[in-house]
Image (cartoon, rainbow, N blue to C red; front, top):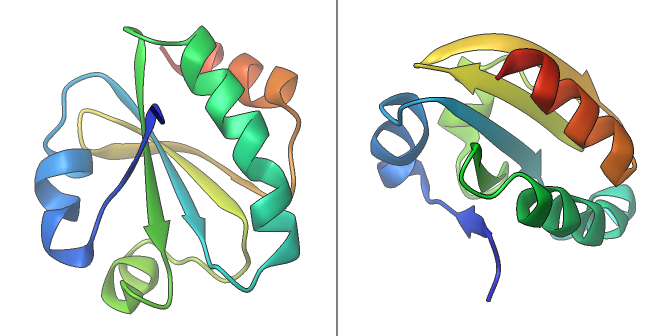
Amino acid sequence: MSRVLEVKQSEFEQKAVQAEGLVLVDFSASWCGPCRRMVPELEAAAEQLAGKATFVKVDVDEAPDVAIRYGVQGIPNLTFMKNGQVVDVAVGLMPKSEIVSRAQRNL
């Protein structure tokens, strides 16, 4: 079972913005090669950070309003939110080690 929760535009406020603690939002798209290559890295990072951070995935094609609201211009885009506020943003393919390192800095 995946530790990265896929959320729809209608669920984003509840599952990401209103969530307590650190939330890593993966803005991606099904047609994006680097996004697909980052899936196992995100899954591994989510496993390592279980109980410390929440991971959600947002498809920019299915949730364009959310992507626009957060200024997503390139994907994959990993937006780190803490208590509803953006605290860090990383664009591009990242290995698990970088995801975990950035998350730990923002816990």
